[in-house]
Image 1 (cartoon, rainbow, N blue to C red):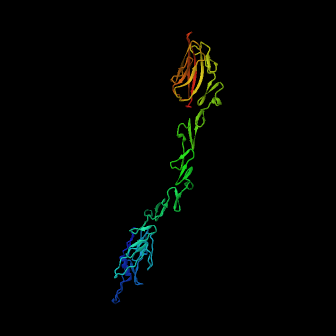
Image 2 (cartoon, rainbow, N blue to C red; image 1 turned 120 degrees about the horizontal axis):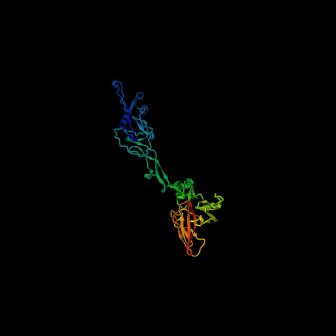
Image 3 (cartoon, one colour; image 1 turned 120 degrees about the vertical axis):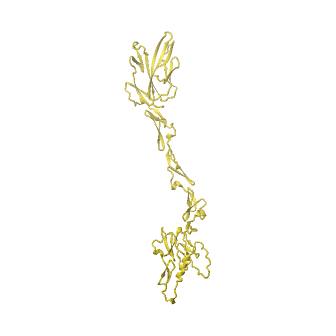
Length: 434
């Protein structure tokens, strides 16, 4: 049975003793003298078998004899008296008898052999060479070197300084070799690093690219800004900057924005909203017997003749009572007025002035809010003997209509009697503060 020489971890240990014994046995077979008259018998060393034709011991080819001599993807290499299991990537060099292989590394010194013992010739085994000491040395490919266990290891040229990179280049070790790389933003031109124009070769920017020495700069179109990756562009939401971008509503769009106004308003300039006077433009639906009154954001239709019995119309917006019997306890006249204000108006605010149309000597006038101020939204301040100012005391929300009766009481000092006149003021509050 042939001996199997293992290859653990790519390490080969060959017992040269039994190889030499087998070699001597092959060269000097044991022969029984002829005078014995007994049958001649021969005995070969393990790993050899007797060749009766040549009358000598010959090597047994275990690799051809055994189907599974080597496992794990290893290749079987037959040699005298045994076989080797080597990786399939191992370099196999076989020399002819008498030839010497040029050593890749300095050969180990061969110890002296006593004269009484014949010197063993050096023999090259597959995958490397074997010195006369019997130690096998693996031959490695370029960029590799054998370690103490005869395993080919990669040479780190960058760590050992065995590279030719320029001073501005960086050495990167690779399996069996190395590479020289330029800094980011540069590219190799023969042995030098030159600026790489990323704008021409890569076009990395979404909008505009500007080349710099060793780098590049991206810029975006108006209304856009650079994303965190510094190459992509994202829309700027101008509406998020401030609530003053638009008076009413800001509409963002890719690269820009626009302002919109509510119904009843039109855009003035870029951000302001201006009331549309439907009464002047004719875009109202009031009837012929109605009067159109415009207010902030809309319009209202009021009767052209607001007088109700027992009052009759004497002039536009003025109603008088001609029957003292029917009008007893009622003001002799009522004047109808209309006004519009914006919502949420700052207070206090003077909004309407009442003034006597006729003045008399020896009279004193007093003013008061007779009706329509249940919530205390207004205050009437006397300005003089013939006038008073209606003051807004609270911000009002709209759209809403307020009807406030303002009364002027006249006291005749000589004749000692009182008279009054009423102004019915309709206040229309718009829906917005503009």
